Image 1 (spheres, helix red, strand yellow):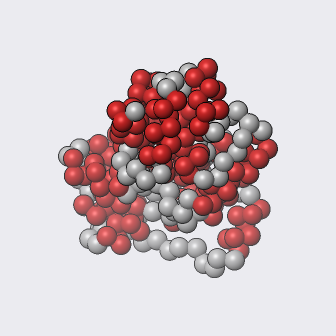
Image 2 (tube, helix red, strand yellow; image 1 turned 120 degrees about the vertical axis):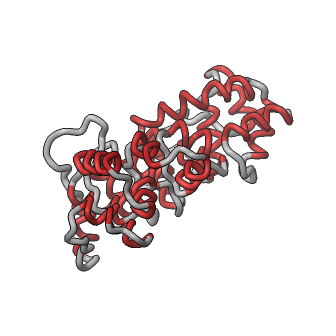
Length: 284
């Protein structure tokens, strides 16, 4: 069964993490089937509909989709309102984002070629070179422009070395830290205090899907995004599912009443998924 509402997709995804026997029985009682239990054809359309309806997505989610190195999935990323200049530039250049990526540039979908031909001139960047532009950044805009020059792993290695040699200006560090593809080790190098951590997460940059699953909110939006993972970022979805599965089985289990409470709470709940699951278990 395919769902398009965030509430139904959230509950369906969580049900897929429960014990299979419990999930089937509970799903019948609360009238929400576990994800993966229905026809894949309408589910494919529901995934794309849900993706299009999510107007604000963390940049890390877009990056996980790009890690599939699939030109057609990159069309969804390129078109999304949350895609920034750095993301679109990488897609246009055919940069491969998979962790073990190698080989020639990724082919560009004809759909993106059409969009580019209609968009006018490409962005202009400073002539200082990457590190020079980062060191010269004295405003938020200059920091963002310089950070957008980073294109691939070689550029990130250069930035890491430059910051170790002499810390980059604050505006440059911030713009780099909230990039979709900033290496987690470099984010920690930029700062580990709680305020910095919170601001980076609030900006939509996460070190892993597990971190996104546990820390971000509201829960209904997080879970709706994760419900797309089996199609859009399957290589990274397991990290989130493996993190949430023990919580689901400990606090929700196979109790129909517990799942009914969850289904009632999820749409208006403002906290994280972890808080939602624990609260539903406690209320029931």
